[in-house]
Figure 1 (tube, rainbow, N blue to C red):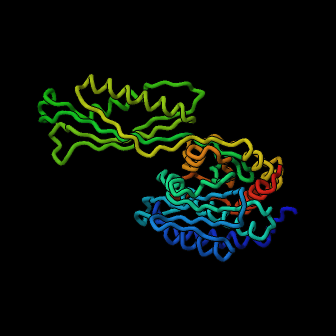
Figure 2 (tube, rainbow, N blue to C red):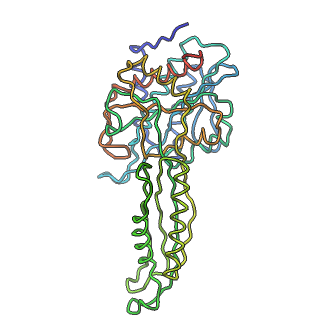
Figure 3 (cartoon, helix red, strand yellow):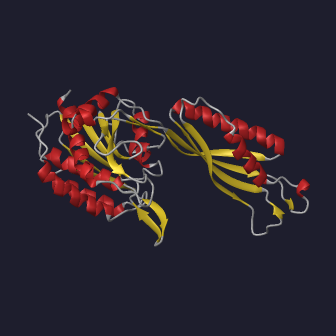
Amino acid sequence: MGFIFDRQRWQPYLEQAFDQLHAMPEPAWQENKTTLFLQQQLRELGYQTITFPDCTGVIGVLGDGPCTVALRADMDALCHRTEKGDEFIHSCGHDAHMAMVLTAAAALRKMPRPKNCRVKVIFQPAEETGEGALRLIEKGALDDVDFLFGVHLRPIQELPGGLAAPAIQNGAACLLHGEIKGLSAHGARPHLGINVIEVAAMLVQMIHGLHWNPLQPASIKMTRLWAGGEAANIIPDHAAFTLDVRAQTNRHMNELVTAVEQLAAGLAGVYGAEIRFTKGVETPAAEVSPQAMEILSRAITDTISGKNLAPPVMTPGAEDFHYYTRLRPGIKATMLGLGCRLEPGLHHPDMRFERQYLLDGSEILARAVWYACTGTP
């Protein structure tokens, strides 16, 4: 029983799927057309499908048995301000991810598999908000999964075209939403007030003064700030802001959040202000299974040769895929990093890549599932 991936057959299938998915970009939790399209495709392939009455997303199930090997693709697009106005664009490559996983699912449908192995293909909504994986975990969609393989296109700065990595070491990310309460006063009498804009500005400067081990990539930056009202001659007494905090490990993330909270508490005491934090979206760092990475490495080597096998990619970008292993530690998981000459970068409205590499991604994913099912290597 050998692995056979008919590239001539699946190339047009992938291209058609990509074109259709690319033409229907939808934001998080609104991927309704995308869900319907994927459900129809999976049913035509012979998969049982699972959808949810209260959210988007679809799961395809093939076969039966105690061992379940799963593929996962994210679905949502991003909103960009362009010359046409606000426009939804698949600027993170989710259209490509879905097309590759759907094509891998189609190829697997035509292959013989061990009778004790089940295949799942998971199309997950709301990755960009960091909520989709959590919702599927709550619904028990991953409770029976033994192996889980994801995929993400990599920008050219991280991975050249034609190379593939058996793991993506995403960092942890956290949004800290802050509120500053000061004291309002007339602009002519600043000594009678507590100016929250000055407090926020000092907070930014003090954050820049934080130091950590330079061998541990991390960053903290203020990404949003609101303060003041219509009257420009009033010292504002309220501000709201957001800090984007990133670290390469979950432990370092906890250390950074604690440092920011302690720094803010000291600053508030100096100014006589009040600073409160609430934690927003938090995405954990990658926890890669050595066994899953070994399988994916073998799949890459057998598809595009060992010379195109790259080491794991380390990136500060976050991915809610890693909630799966954090909350279901029994799952053996890793993500395929696919080099495809992606420029100028992810989340850019003009993001582009060379589509010729997507078929490699589909075959690698299909091989990884088949190898996991058959116990190879």
